[in-house]
Length: 354
Image (cartoon, rainbow, N blue to C red):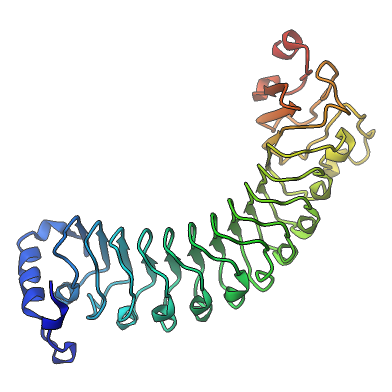
């Protein structure tokens, strides 16, 4: 479809091609249900102005040839999705100022400047593009959710003014530091598969509950000490040797730390709970776990401190925990169901299974 043949949108008329498409989709009104129009695998579609004749709440497009935003689409839309549509340019998308949620994953986008003025946006998902510069998004102060996985982003300082942001997903980029998130107010942070070595900045996230930092280059967890509301942590596949810095996080429910190089002894791994403060301190062979803990996963615990045949855990005090997975230098691994939690001894399979 040749965009050069389109009439000026200020004339409130549709191009001939757009009018043809309007008639085409009116013949298939079952596609429009509850003010939602879904279009899949239409290689002729690139002009969306025909949708102005429909009072749509949502417009979903996927696997189309190449979408252009030269003309506005349905101005009643609050959700727009265009995935796998080979979109390279967003120029003109700001004509749709009613948009609240925007999904543009798996396209060819590099420039986000056309989004700069779309202040009504609350959710943006632009995974799988070619984005390096996210500075234009810093103007969208109503954003609560931002998904930018699988791009080429390096610097998080470009979005430090998004005070309403609660969920940030930046997995599989080229980020080396979390510096720049200090002013944010996150509940969930997903940053797997980056090159992060420095957690500085995360200590200001007082409302953070879920944290995913798998497959990075992290060795120091001390900035997490001040994240007092953390419930769920995944730090698999890093360079961590000490878990002790996070033992003061009383709210922690799940900790995944497989494939690290943990050398802490059991006394450093214990999670204290007020219920047990007056009781005898655990021995080197005991781990005390907060009553809120649901899952605890470790691997590569140093065999210099624990031989597989020795008792690593002689007592787990809380029955609410559902699963424990521990590995000593990759030689021994056991997982416990709740009914088997009160006794678990490495090297003694019979006793552990009773």
